[in-house]
Length: 247
Image (cartoon, rainbow, N blue to C red; front, side, top):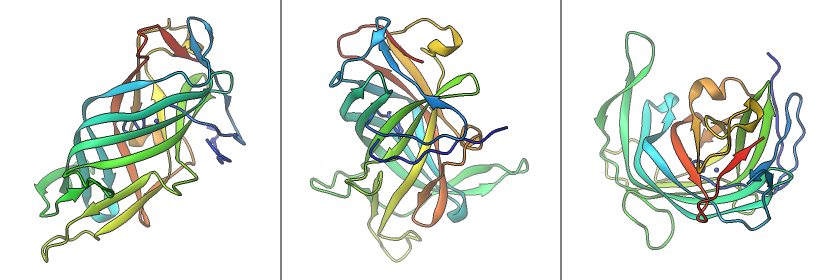
């Protein structure tokens, strides 16, 4: 299978969305496979500045296998989301993950990481007002068509140099560093509203990120120096309530 590589020159819930929420952003891509897609509203290219919002489906997680750690967040709030270019499939999103907790993990019999116990590390938003259990992520987003399916590639905003940082209090028993940047990129697949597959426009586009989707691409996400993965789903919608889709 051909691999897709993207380098943002200026670009998701998303993230995500985180994430796992997002919206979309202004980037140019160099692709070994796949081409830049579009954002459509009522069958025409979305107008620059169109607002996008979203919500998380279930809990979302940031998995860090090398540290046997998962950050599990119960909610996500879209702080800012907008289309930068519907014709180029670009947008910008800033989200706040809420009610986040750090868990320890271990491999089960199937070789998969499973949650064990909550780590004694309090997570805090890394800027004022330092919301307890909060993680802020800012991403530039690009719609990419790859081998017949539609994806959103999210990269940290170049102005911020990263998606964001994860801040923890550091009592003696907390095994995690106090402040770690999350950098790189993550790919979300459009589950609904994928016009390239002949699906209809919808009011809510369901997007998903998981390790098996990341494995299709060379783009990587890192928590510090440790490779990491986002696992979660989000529903993206327009405040106007119009139907829309990606192609």
